[in-house]
Structure formats: structure tokens, C-alpha cells
Amino acid sequence: MDGEKKSVSEKMVAYYNAEGGDTLYTSQLQPQSMSFEVIDRKIFAEVLYPRDIYGLIDFHVRECVKREVRMRVCKNCLRYFAVTGKASMEYCGRICDSKGRTCREIGAINTWMQRKQGDEVFKEYRREYKKRFARINAGKLTKSVFYAWSEEAKKKKEDCDNGTITPEDFSRWLKESRERDVAKTMS
Image (cartoon, rainbow, N blue to C red):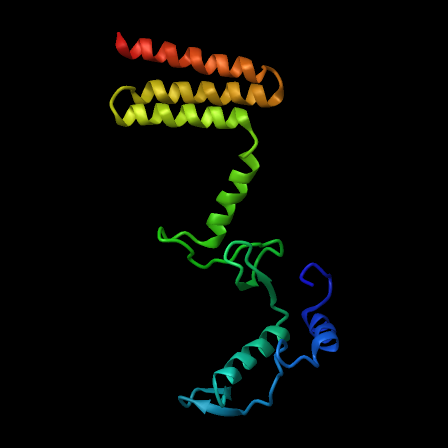
């Protein structure tokens, strides 16, 4: 339903024509008590007087339909969110973990990880990168040696991804560079 190129209003009409008789699963919009009032002697505004919490929800659903707000289910937390900005948005902005990261941030990380899942060259590069970074923290490798290696490793990995060198050549280079850098730090 979300992927269709219809307006929100057209989608609601189609939904109620198909599902409207099922009062358990469809929202039955109720008459709302509304009034126009002067607020703080400055603003003339529409005021809602809901009978209960459902009246408030009903009002917000109506406003979303009126304003053509598109809703989508977040691919991370599986809860509905209003699509604002990019129409291709797949993740909401709710905080979803103890580190304070949002579904949008987690979703981007997960998508990136899934893309890299089958990439053995990347896994090997990442493993070596983490080992070397840990050696900096342990005081066994200098930052300058690490960053020089990192730049060279990125270029070699790009060469491997482009097919200029084979994955075996890349693995061999990683091993040789590790042995070379260990020898440098020992002397």
C-alpha cells in the first residue's frame, strides 16, 4: 500500500472500501467536538474537545490524512512513523538502544554490515585493521606507522576490489606488511 503512487486520501478511500466493515481492525472515525475560540486575547483558533484518548487519536489521524502525511513501518523497530523529508526513508528517528542511537543510525549500520557480510577481502582487511589499532593502544605501534599502513592498505584493497590484484595477493601483502611493521617496532 505504501509503494502505490496514490494520494493519502485515495489510499484511505480504498482501505475503507475494502476493510471498512471490519470494526475490529479499522479505525471508525467518530464525530469530534470542535470549537473556534479566542486564546489569550490574541489568537482565534480551532479547539478540540475530545471525549477520551481515542478522540485525540482520531483527530491526529484526520490531520495526517488532511495534510497528506505518509506513514511507514520502521524496518528496525517495526513501529509506524511519519515520513518527512526523503520519500525513500525506511527508518524512524526513535532512540532504540542504550547508547542513544536512533533506528536511522542503527539501520544504516546494519545495511552496511549486510552489504559487507560476504566480502572476505573486507573481513580480512577489517580484522587486520582492528589488530593494528589495538597495538596502538597497547603502545606496540606508533600512530604514524599505523596511519601510513592504513592508507597503503586502503589502496591495496581498492586494487583488489577493482581486480588489479587477486585476493590471495592482498592476503599475502597484509601478512608481509604485518611482519615488516613488527620488525620495525622491534628495532
